[in-house]
Length: 470
Image (tube, rainbow, N blue to C red):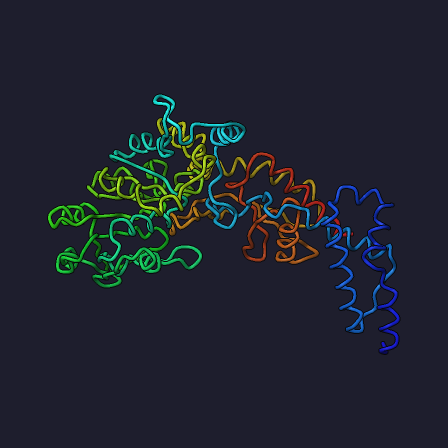
């Protein structure tokens, strides 16, 4: 296209004002806020100019420009945070929002959000109250701790505790416990921000009690134990137990803290899963402070929970950082409802989605897979091979890294497209359906499916596979 032709086409582009006038004649624009529409028109025209200057041909009629702008505006108006169907089998899928909230928590959130509450008001005295009061007694009851509080997440909890109890002083940690959690956040980095001075002891695979003993000086504020919940070191290994550290801390008058990461309030080994230290185990060991997440194995909202000795907790509560890291009323309402269920363990396992999915047996996944397979086979007909595949689900969220949960899955092998292409099309569905690829098959794991997901998945597969076949 010559320079003259380019200029001719550019001159034919309608102006912003003329397109806004044209939009008034289209009832489809009534649902779009004027500022959004105007911005979309400007961006549409700018993109067209850019294409034309590069030599591309473009339809610059007013009707086409407006239609393109309307499509852009509708896309802008769609929510960015949207529901997804988790068909991956990863229960605590960090990218998909981790723990699902139980019905009790959702109901309480609605109740508290729709009106005023006693968030920081003591109804009995008529004076200002403390927001932690809603969950502190519950946490103490469930863990055996003297005091408790909650902040925005576990990294925040660790930061707050170190800043309060060890700022400017040494914190002794085993070299094998300097973990990195999701998003490249590392314990040494969190400690540096807190003002604590990291003092590593032992080797990567072996740390002895004497390593801690010889490292303690007058500048030592804390012995920190970090639960390596997202990896395992196997073979020639040695670590120091929390009770041993607690005894040493008491003898040398040094505080002991454990970061449990994915803390749990129940013994998962009773449900056929690996043995994990419970929060009450850590508290009973004599640790001064124990921190853990609320949205992992606990199955509640994103929070960082701090439990332990009253003297230490009271210091933490008065740290100015506490206000910056505090949780809001909706998180508090959700956390309280979740914790209340733990008073009856059987009820907690039944009602808290994370616990229910993790404790699901292979036989239960078989029962859930049967109607799903039949529905998919009936809908997609001869456009794909649909069969069972006995694979493994995962806990996710940095918990139980080596634990494979046997699960009967559905494997779909498309005949007219690759499994990777099917995965993408399912991901771009509304709602997005997130599965996984195994041996060039698209896998749907029933362990993480929720009520109503089966029909949505079957509809999407039928549309994608049969459309492609035509």
